[in-house]
Image (tube, rainbow, N blue to C red; front, side, top):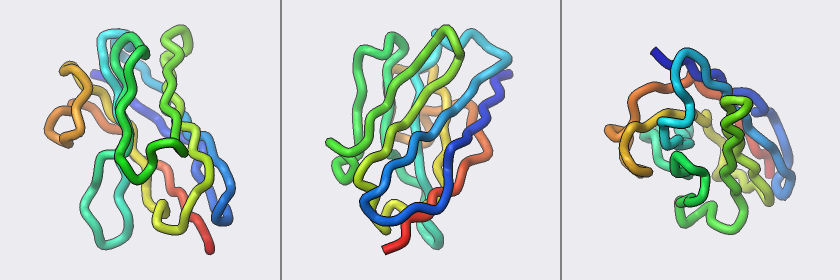
Length: 123
C-alpha cells in the first residue's frame, strides 16, 4: 500500500508561483508513473500533469502547459509540481496519484491518491 502526502499549497495572488510536493511511502516509488489532478469547487476532478516512471517524459493539460513543470526525485520518493504564473481559475485542491500504467490522463488509470492540498489564487 502506497501512502501519498501532498504539501505546498496556499493562498497566492495571480501571477505568483507555488511548488507542490508529494511524498510517497510504502511502495517502490520508481515503479510508478505519477500524476497531478485538481478539483475546483463544484467541478469534477481533472487531470493536470503526468510524469513517466523514468521522469524523462511529462504531459500536461493544455491550460497549464508552459507554466507548470512536473519533476520527480526517486531518491527522496517525492514528486514536485512547480506552478508559475498562477491564474484564479487554478484555484482547486491538488491531488497526486500513482499509476502502474504508462502515463495516463484518466482518473481510472491511477491506484493510490493523496488527501490533496488547497491552492487558492486571488485576482
